[in-house]
Amino acid sequence: MAKTTDVFKNEIFKGKVLLCSGGGSGICRAMTEAVVRHGGKAVIISRSFDKLEKAAKEMSEATGGEVIPIQADVRKPADVENAVSKTVEKFGKIDFLINGAAGNFLAPFQKLSYNAFRTVVEIDLLGSFNLTKAASEHLKASKGSIINVSMTLHYTGSPYQQHAGAAKAGIDALTKHWAVELGPFGVRVNGIAPGPIVDTVGLDKLARSGASYETIPLGRAGSVTDIAQSTVFLFSDAAEWISGHMLVVDGAHWLTHYTPGYPGIVLNPPSKL
Ligand code: HXC
Image (tube, rainbow, N blue to C red; front, side, top):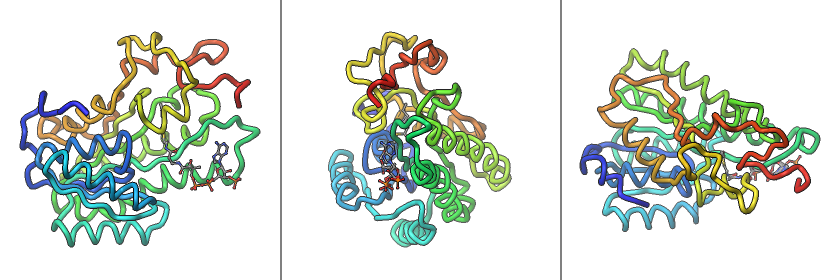
């Protein structure tokens, strides 16, 4: 990934501690790496310890900073409480929290089972609640900052995405509720809504092969670096009076989502489902 230090000062997060769910891959890994590149330390959590361990090692080597993997399923309160305790044992506090763990797939209404809908809502929405609840006292103590990772597909009625859309709409709501309730404790709560980001599991799952990005007004798909730079901005003191905001980082893509026949770039045509 491109160095966010090209844009931001090197050590703005020196002494800061990040806890990031979903930090073992894709967007959240880049968000974590950006914080560590700027002097922070990080704990990444997800279900797959092998993937996490590899990512943590690679990020530590790439940045010279400390990244620790802890296995946790965000759907399980006991797991996230354990992850929070271990983070505080290791680093003494938590300054930044990223709620990034997510699951997704394309599924038309008739093929979306009860369990499939519930699974995505449990990972994305309940998982964000669980981790934030577990970490909230530490975030208050540090006057910390939260970033919730959302998306833009629920801004319109994107087909085959009601499970993820409902979950992310809930996350957007939590961003506002937490900003109001945690603001008096000095905690800022914001979100990032990425558009199509290349080389991520999400886009691989949702994009049709040969997708064109010409409909994105800024003329290209996003990269994980685009999200990393926004993360550095939102966690930085430059954003000290920004809370309750969902920052859309998508080259103005969502404004072009709907066209007849669903040829949006993040959708497979119905015939392939
Ligand atoms: C229909 C599906 C399905 C599919 C799974 N299910 N995949 N239904 N179409 N493609 C159903 C299963 O049949 C099952 O229901 C239920 O979902 C739970 O599936 P499990 O595999 O048992 O659950 P689990 O192991 O917890 O896996 C969760 C998962 C999985 C979401 C299904 O894909 C996953 O863990 N993914 C993590 C990585 C990921 O998806 N990242 C992308 C995030 S992208 P039944 O009824 O059979 O029991 C994102 C934003 C993208 O969030 C925005 C881009 C612009």
